[in-house]
Image (tube, rainbow, N blue to C red):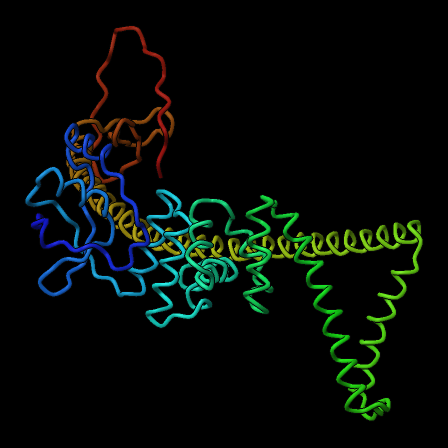
Length: 392
């Protein structure tokens, strides 16, 4: 159907901020509109679901009406569809995606809900939202590519702890043009420094409050103390280790990590194998089910065919019986004629016999009820003796 272009409103769920329609206008002028706009009815107007660039191009070209395809969709489905369709055609800029996620949070959605509905990683959503915790200068640095969204994602824990601390690292990233790997090293060192500061601060507070060592009473107290002592022991041990010992520990650590990765890979392989086997079983069950259904259909069809064939054979036999009965009547007539015309003295039994025809055969039968036709003398050469089939 055709709808006036001024009755079609842009989608409120459109993340795109920049629309380049110059090339599209040329294509429409040359080839026309190749695909309809997709809309949904909203009161007196139509809300656009797919075709924002096309609508803008048509309006600039002066089209008053345009062909559309009207569908019925809920808000949740429209939001997901608009986001995915546009992202497939061309990936969003960081600013477009960040402002879109921010808009959804203003509508009441949490980052977790956004990630689930749009099928996007939760930390990716959080990174885009975290940028709005900083000034416009920092935001602009992200929009222009001075820092990347991966840097912001790596700073997630720092931002959660302190935006001032994160701001210091961001400025260092911009000024020194740090890579993501270098940034992660700084974050790791900063984390260790913060942990040391926390321990020292806790020690000061504990000294003031209770100079005596706290008594460990419950199993939980002992576990906490053991964990803290083990952590402190590792740090002290690392300080006194030689480079050779450090390398050995690092090698063992890498070996364990490799072993964990190997086990995970093997676990994943076995899981995939299990899934494949399960899929094969399901497929086989479906095949068996379909095979049984086909066999039943064939059986029913054969039964129908057999009945029809029997009926056909019955009709054929009935016709044959009628024909044979008719032939029998004719043979009886022929027999009566032969009884009268062809009786003679049989040279084999020296009795009165008759010759009659049944089908293609000539039969001889002894008869005492018919008069024998006397033989006439025949001066012609004697023919070869007839070997008829005798019938008693």
